[in-house]
Image 1 (tube, helix red, strand yellow):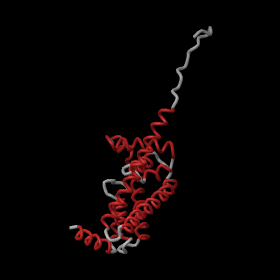
Image 2 (cartoon, rainbow, N blue to C red; image 1 turned 90 degrees about the horizontal axis):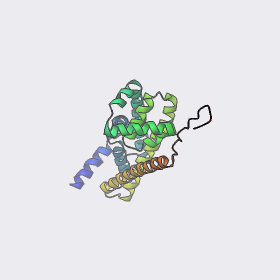
Image 3 (cartoon, rainbow, N blue to C red; image 1 turned 120 degrees about the vertical axis):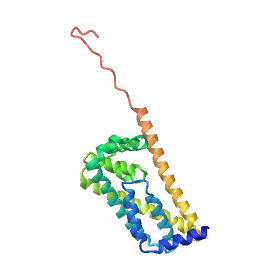
Image 4 (cartoon, rainbow, N blue to C red; image 1 turned 180 degrees about the vertical axis):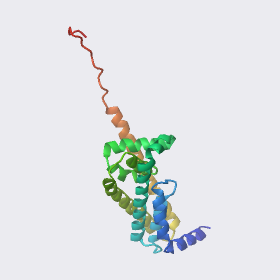
Length: 216
C-alpha cells in the first residue's frame, strides 16, 4: 500500500504541473487557511531530495503564491474586513484579537511572525487591510515573510527527504513534525510573553480628590 502511495506521489511530483499546483495552494492558503500550504511545500521539498522536483523552483513558486494570496487577503480586508471582524466567533475572533494586539505592539514585523501561525496569517493580513496599513510597507514585510516561509518549508522537506532518501513517507512525517513543533513553540512563547506582560503591568493608582481647603 505504501509503495503504491509513494509511486503515485513520485508521478505527481515529476509532473511540471506540480509548480502550478504549488502556486495555487500557496495562493489560496493566504486567505483560506483550511488549504494546507505548508504540507504541499514540505512534500515537494521531500521529493526534491530524490530529484522529482527542483528545490529552488519549489521555494520560488511557493513564495510567489503566498505573496499573491496575502495581498488578496489584504484587499479583502480593505473592502470588507470590518464586517468580517464583527462576525468572527470562537477561534476566529481570538485570531483577530491576537492580530490587532500584535500589530499595535510590533507593527509590520507581526506579518513575518504570523506567517508561521496557521490561521494567524489570514487574520493578520485581513486586519492590516481593514485598518488601512500602508500598502507599500505591507508589501515589503510580506515579501520578507513569504520568502522566509518558502525557504523554511522547502528546506524542512528537503532535509527530511535527505534523512530518509529511500522512504519519502518518513521524510514527509519528519518534515511535518518539525513544522508542527515550530508552530507550537511559537504559540507557547507568545502565550508566556503575554502572561508575563500582564503580570508585570502595574495597575494605575486611584486618583485622590482634594477639595479647596486641602483636606482629602
